[in-house]
Length: 106
Image 1 (tube, helix red, strand yellow):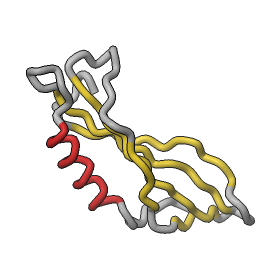
Image 2: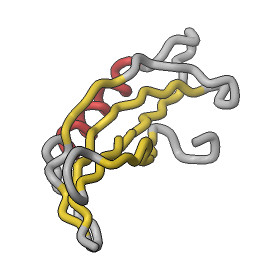
Image 3: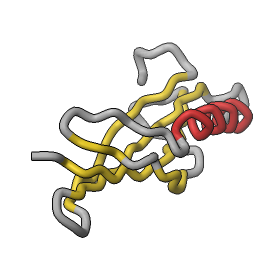
């Protein structure tokens, strides 16, 4: 994110694990929104809220297309508050998590 144009978002999948039942898998889709810190060194809550709202509108109940699998609509989960990471001195980030459940066909 330090070399990306800000504001921006990244998408990552985490915690792939088998679910209950034959061929069922689950994972978290984590979207991180990045904004610059305001001049007073505070998070840009307005921009983070704008990005979070847009991501939520796009991904809540979205159906991801996977090869050799059938995905259920994404399940909106929680989000973190604005966080600062030392490696990104002038930026704040906020993560939003969506649950992905899919059936894998062998």
